[in-house]
Length: 387
Image (cartoon, rainbow, N blue to C red; front, side, top):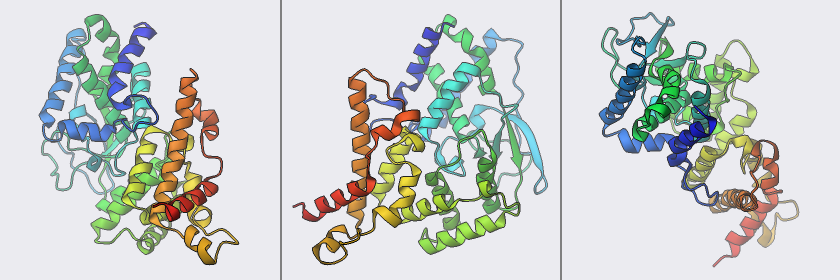
C-alpha cells in the first residue's frame, strides 16, 4: 500500500483517541476508558467485530489457520506454559492489567508500529495470568486473561482490529494489512503459575523493569500496583504503609540488581501522590496519557523534588504573613500543577499556529515553565489573596 494511503488509514484509526488536536482542550480519549465505555456492557459486540476481521482475513488467506490454546493449562507452581491466544481472550479493562491502565501515548505509538511492521509475538510474547479461580482444563472465557506484561500491545491490537472492522475498508485497502492482522489475530503468550496474587503482581513489575527495550513503568503505574496490593491485604495507601511496601519489595528481590527495584526517585513520587488531591491525580494522569513523562510539562524529576524543594517555605519567609502565604496547601499544589500544564499546552499551541511541529523529544524543555519553584510561589500568592 502506498505510504500516503496507509497514513490515511492510520489517521482514521487513531482520530477518536487524539481528540481535536488542540493542546489546550483536554479531549484526547483514554484508550482503556474508550473500550470500557463502549464494550464493558456488550463484550460480544467487540468479539463479533474482531471475528469479522478474522473471516475477511481468511477469505484472502485460505491456507492460514490460527491455532489457539482454548483451555486453562494445568501447571505446577512456578511452571511456565507457552501458547497462542485470540485477541478476544485478552481483557481490556484496567482490572485486566496488574499495573493498571495503559498510557494512551505509548499505545498509539505501538499501534502505528504494528501497522508498519506487524507484531512479532514469537520474539516478544505477552505475559499473562488467568483470573482467580480459573480451573485447569476449563475453557478460556472471552476477555478473561489478565496482563502481567504486554497490556499496551494488547490494547494496540484491539485498536487496530476494532478500527479496521468499523472502517469497512475496500479490498485494495484491506489486503496490504493482512500480514499485520494475522499477527494480531493469533498472539503468543507465556503463563507462569505463581504461588499467590501478590507474587504475580511483584513479578509483573520486575519483569517489566527487566525488559530493556520496553518503557519502564512510570510512578503512576507503580503507585497503582502498590495501592492495589495494599488494598488486597486490608491496608491503606498511607506513607508508612508505602515505606514498608517498598522496603519489603526491594529486599524481596535476591539478585540485588538496582534497575529491578523501585528507585528512590520513584519512591518519592509515589509518596507525593499519596498526599495529593483527586484533582491533582486527575490532572497528572491525563497529562501523562497524552505526553510521555520525559517529554511533558512535568518530568518525573520535577515531581520527585516537589516535596523537598518546591513545596517548602522559602528561606527568609518562615515568619509572619509570608509563612502563611507559602505554607503548603492542597489547593496551592493543584493550582501549581494546572499552571505547569497550561503553560506547556499554550506554548505548543503557539508553535502549531506558526506552522511548526514541536519536537518534544529534543526540545520539550523549551515549552515548560522555566522555574517550577517560582511558579509554585506565584500560585501560593494567588490562592492566599484571591477573593
